[in-house]
Amino acid sequence: MGGFLILIIIFAAIWLLFVLPARRRRSSHAAMQDSVEPGNEIITAGGLHGTVTAIEDDLVRVEIASGVVVTLDRRAVAAVAREVDVEVEPEIEPGETEKPG
Image (cartoon, rainbow, N blue to C red; front, side, top):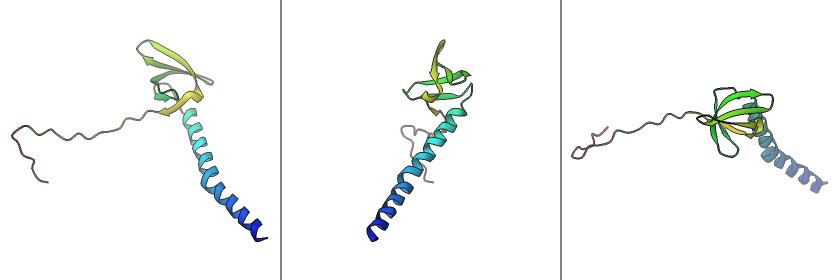
């Protein structure tokens, strides 16, 4: 009986550590793919970056270069590109010293 209880505990631990997080990731990825709309900048599963121009059922038209539009399956969308604000430190001119603070 004790061995059976250990097997049940191991199965529950595997379920909680691996299966549930994978299921959450899959559902959030599917929700992201469903929320894609024209004008979004996306990254495809193949690594192409482009802008969505039109959506028809499960097909997405993506402009990857000026005048180059490809048709992809909606499931090929890996991510919606987000702009990241990068803070750039000012360069120090030769002969200047850094001010503390």
